Image (cartoon, rainbow, N blue to C red; front, side):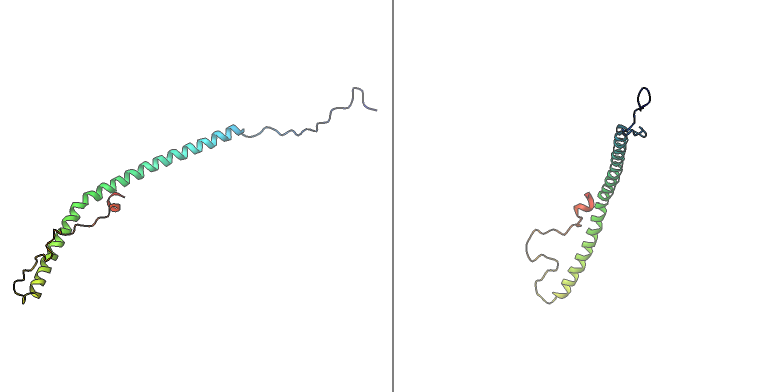
Length: 120
């Protein structure tokens, strides 16, 4: 028969040792990584914004020089075109070279600077 006091109990339940960090520790580590990542995204955004603004200011400072260069080019082109027109129309009586035949208020073209180049 059985030993006096009965047989020892048989451990049949699954006993997993408690090793490693808990779920709460993993959640904390995950949230720490997310906060760290978002912080450095913000730092990068600030530096890129500063560089973009500096580039915008530099381009805006160049516009008067570009406009002056285009104005000089236009004046030279207009003088050459008027001289060619005078040469071509020399045989037409009463023709005045360089005069607008359309009677409009057209202005000479300005430098075409796309808004994206200066502000984008």
